[in-house]
Image 1 (cartoon, rainbow, N blue to C red):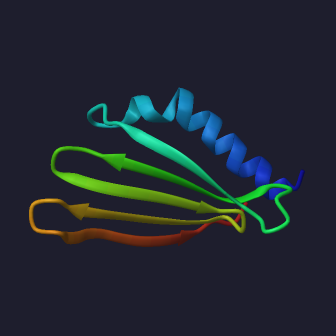
Image 2 (image 1 turned 90 degrees about the vertical axis):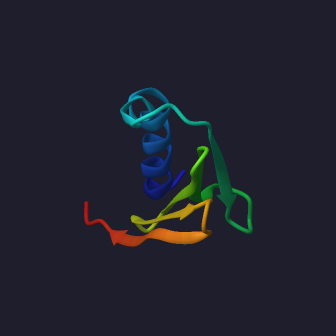
Length: 88
């Protein structure tokens, strides 16, 4: 297992326990793993959130970047579209 996958697994574990409790209101979410073509490990973790007013996705990549996007379901406008890169 590569160090980068450990970061994704650590985040997924944190989110499943402590992270989701910090959401403003409880909302359903779905976690998806995107596997490398060789299938040995995943290099991307997607978390989709849905509420009555919006839909959002947090995408974490093994190279320590994060993309966050959210769409207002009433007018279909993207109101968050941010990309971050972290140095650890």
